[in-house]
Image 1 (cartoon, helix red, strand yellow):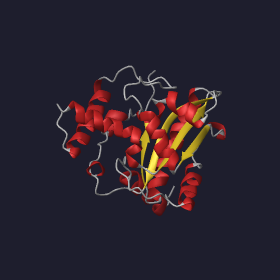
Image 2: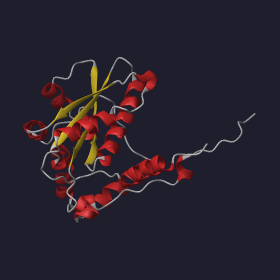
Image 3: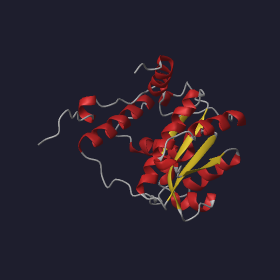
Image 4: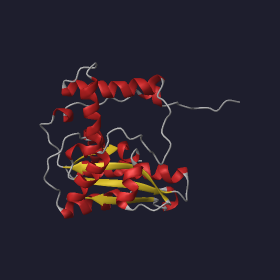
Length: 230
């Protein structure tokens, strides 16, 4: 089958150029661009086309207000709706550390400087200065498959943002403060908070936007099967 070269190259370029943006310009994105972003993300595939996600779109003062509520105390235990990993080990831990160290190096933060590392972690709850925030939930009625579908929707949202020249970052920290997010957005009990996506115009001068994470070699990820064992 002959592939459509322009489509293939467009997707490849989007995937290769997308990165987690951790510094945004304060100017809001025009409404028509935001609508195009959401319409494009809505094309995400899902099991039996159930589309189990819901997006709460925050802009204007709501972004700063939610950030302020999430910053209160700075020591409140994280409360995830979806269980998080108890710990990271092996290659997963190595990749996690590599990403963190690359971020600190870009910011000039020494590994032993715990306070600056903590301050940077709290930038998650400032949404890195983004003027827009999408809080993404999923229905509890369809179980874990709905969460998988919602993850695909978030990936589409990130790539759609890149296609429109926007910066974006997925924020698990939103899911970690469901105790704050739920009442603030009046999220019903039959929805779980999965994550957030902060987006806006990228601040290309911000040092955190200069580094890139690596990807594992295919041999580490792909198990090739040509014949099944007898």
